[in-house]
Image (tube, rainbow, N blue to C red; front, side, top):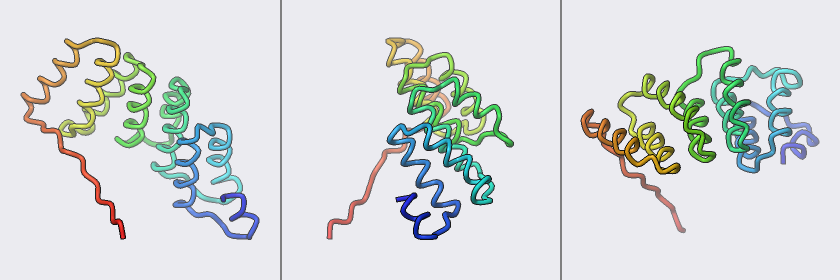
Amino acid sequence: MFKKMKGEGLCPNEVTFIAVLTACARAKLVEIGLELFQSMAGEFGLVPIMEHYGCVVDLLGRAGLLREASEFIRRMPFEPDASALGALLGACKIHGAIDLGNEVGSRLLELQPQHCGQYVALSSIHIGVNRWGVSADIRKTMVEARIRIVPACSLIDCK
């Protein structure tokens, strides 16, 4: 669709790139995603913002390129926000990267100490490698800090 859009003379904007980079992340199209990210400034004169960087972290992380995702975060022109770090933490959970997950989780807890998602993700990483005691300690910390898990919900309009 992106190629078709360009072929018809339409110029992508920042939102277009978020959508395309997200699609590349879901499909694990790493090379294409990285090329598109580079083309933002080079070909289209768009300055990537935090959301674009977060998409690239997600792209690399989902593909199991955790070292590259971590290095990408280090090279960002600004401090990563919770969404970029959260993408890396999610990748650590998927790929069982405990040490990196703990490091990223600690940074996230500094940024958002009352956000339940960071605790749950860290707990899940440890459960994934049968570290039940560590997971229980994380959950206990949540209880002591009175951090409650917010139930998820969705709304589907079936008309």
